[in-house]
Length: 188
Image 1 (cartoon, rainbow, N blue to C red):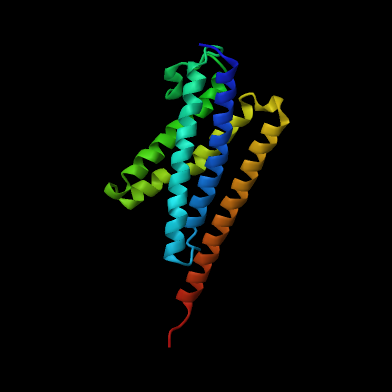
Image 2: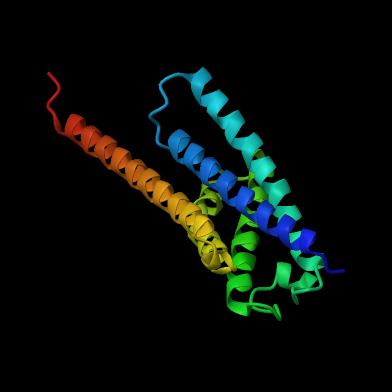
């Protein structure tokens, strides 16, 4: 089945997924920073993080389904889980597939978080730092370059995420140095 509406829907759901992913990752960076002062605030941020992650997943599934169903391009069902098997834009669809596979691992381990060792969940959740840039590269190269607004939007998301990650790392290193300084002091 081929329709321009499928193409527009696939593109729109991809853009919404990217925007939601950006917000979800930023919220995750914020809660993981340890800078949230109140437990109630942290709980609220985590609920918003999870709800937006669920919304992003729904939009992402719609993006994938509409891309596969649209017969104008050759993106088969296998291409949704096996990278670099698409007959259309093999490299860039492959990047999207890798990002999706990593996201699946993140979602599944998050669903079963309370049944997994904390270190295992955290190790998988840290792949977000790999998955997100791969997803942005996919979005940037899948036809958005022809329309500057999408290029700027993707670049803006990337910039915001880089700044957020740098702030997160900076906060962590400041806290580490502060703890080391306190630990090195003599107690009288």
